Image 1: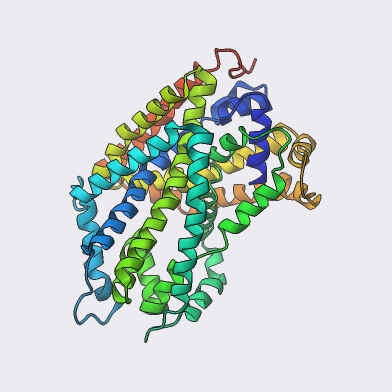
Image 2 (image 1 turned 90 degrees about the vertical axis):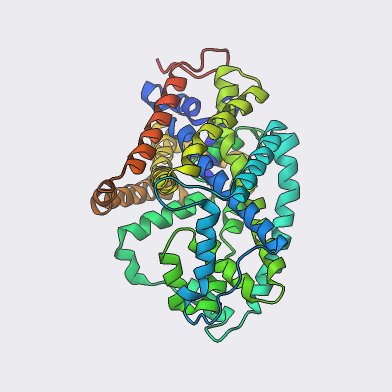
Length: 448
């Protein structure tokens, strides 16, 4: 978090807000700006599937509000039987089944509304759009989250209590640490939830004043973001530890879009708590999706001299074309999330640290990080950023490559290869754009 804020502020002082141009500032090598392509490719790939999943939360909130969400199965006595109607509902909502999906009318409508809202917020720009939206949305998020949190604390069933759920959440299974998949997934999760390794924070930091503090702000945002969890304790309350684990293992979306709707359906006034929960997720998703599109928008503005409105239209246009794969082609979300949303952000985080602490120089980076700070960072963090962080991330990636990559590459189907081919095509598209960018005043360095 500190590294990305420092790099963004440094790039902003020279009029650069994206990683291809910033990396060109940090190094005279022409290769550096092409490494920065990840800071455009990753957020675009992620936001393309993220914005569709974000729209699910709007659709689910409307289903709960209208009373058209699933009902509990009569006579169910196991976690699997308990959530069966909600599993069926998710499949019908997304139109899953076979290689080509057939999403419901609510799914298409909710996505169209979500896309328009993202466009309107982005079209108004940083100060008039994103900043105003964040000032309204973030306090509302905390209010709704507190209501749901206290409701979860009062839950108690024959299977468990909120205390057992929190106990399960905060007591680690140390044997899992020998599994490289756990490390990769954990690193990807914390990077994802903090929006690290995307290039988005670097872009936002390029807009702040050169004299603005980043140390306290970075520490605060990282701390608050990691302080809450509702879904897991609630699932343990209703399904027990074994049931909650079974549901979580059965699919990436099962905890949020299957088990939680079942929980809301079983509690008093659950229809309204369900609406509140998914509407909360929708607001949270909006704050993330508008952030993830900003690097590409800024790239067209800074490096091609396009107006803000044209840059937004181009970016939204690429998302609209790309999201067809996500909505209709099986395996696309899993593949894109794996390569961009898990492995990609960890890899790019490693590249960022190397560029900042080694290519730019450790002492230069440390001075930039501590410039105009409100809190003074202990010198220990210099050694963590310069040595521990890159070595740690490098070991994780090597470990993953040996243990898990062969298994991933063994997956073969025409939908998987189509989704991978599209990822490569997007990367090539950005490589061409970077190649011909920076020709205007204030644009990217040539690297000569």
